Picture 1 (cartoon, rainbow, N blue to C red):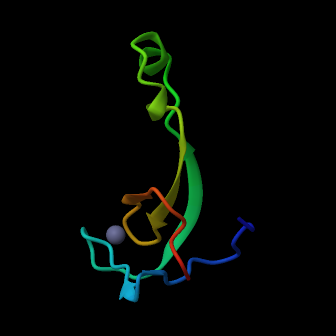
Picture 2: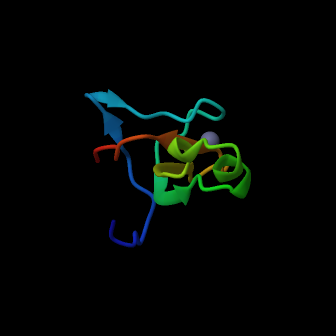
Length: 71
Ligand SMILES: [Zn+2]
């Protein structure tokens, strides 16, 4: 995913994404690794995956997505 210069609006399946905390509609995209040593230790390797994240430009709340949100 390309580095953004500014926060932009996203939508998922034609639903505009709005921050559940402050109702802002501009976000920064990113990736998060769910890998934890505890997950591997207990055999929960399905937790060792990456998710797409959108960080609210206004309040910093992070939304997590299993698939890349559209823009
Ligand atoms: Zn917000």
